[in-house]
Length: 416
Ligand code: ASP
Image (cartoon, rainbow, N blue to C red; front, side, top):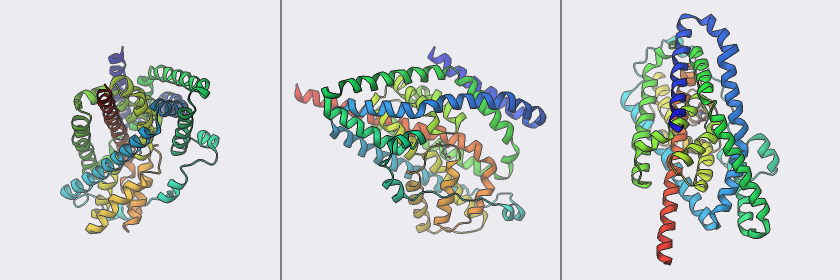
């Protein structure tokens, strides 16, 4: 049954790709009609269904996870370990992007005309500063945080409720039970929504590829190749090491088990929207403990975006090369720091990588208009980096889960 669904999603993905590209090349008019009445509605229904579950899943499972830890010390330990691992993997990711782009030089021989360069433009959006984000973590109105889906605030609020439930114990048994049952309900709904995933995936991919097609690729092919290569290297080397050496599991088993969530991440381009599915997949297929999954993955969807960091590294070098600007070592370090810190406050939703990139370019004085050069292809790369982003969250969740399990066994042995 499980394998069946994975296979079905993959079929949806491949069929969607073929349909989108074929229509883009041979029947753009037909694509327009089909997109309006079939692909787009299918995709939007699927997105709506999973988006509906994000906030309640994060709230219920995190409250339950924290309350289930039994003591607040454990929470602190897990928190420090998780955030330290997130920041380290993101720094590694962007460094891989910078190194690979410096070595391959995708922007030096790009067949971009002067006209391309002159006509490139991009309007940067405002991003909150790191200080603002940190101060903003405690919600002054938790209901508003839930209503707006402000992930960091929801996480903070849920942790507080979880701590209270732990400390009050017997007194709040009823609410604990309620949260437990709420969690059951939403986990069941995720399973139900997943049944629609093959069709939703088909619709989303056909719609995206039908629109973007191959054309947007040509002039910046090398840029795309370098980003994809860096994503693959990061998945194999960085996540492979976390899984093999820290979690002591087989990386192939990990990627096989997590594949259904990766395909959904790919088709939705949103770590946030994929959250219910990536949590369920990690818990069911990778045996990640519920507390670890419900603590690490929602946090990761917001603050750990390695695929996005890779794109920023490669894009910064690419744009510098296209405009013939040499970056100094200090500027490169600034890129790493800005990208890592900026990713903390931005939620994993489609296209957020470009906004972060504008921030990074600004910081090192590169022309933000350069983003215009890579805009056309970004939709497709966004899909790939989102699949990597959520894999990173799952790899860290597995590591935290395994290390907590080991600690427990050791403690029990010590007590015996
Ligand atoms: N779409 C990505 C995510 O949700 C973020 C980005 O790179 O734009 O993880």
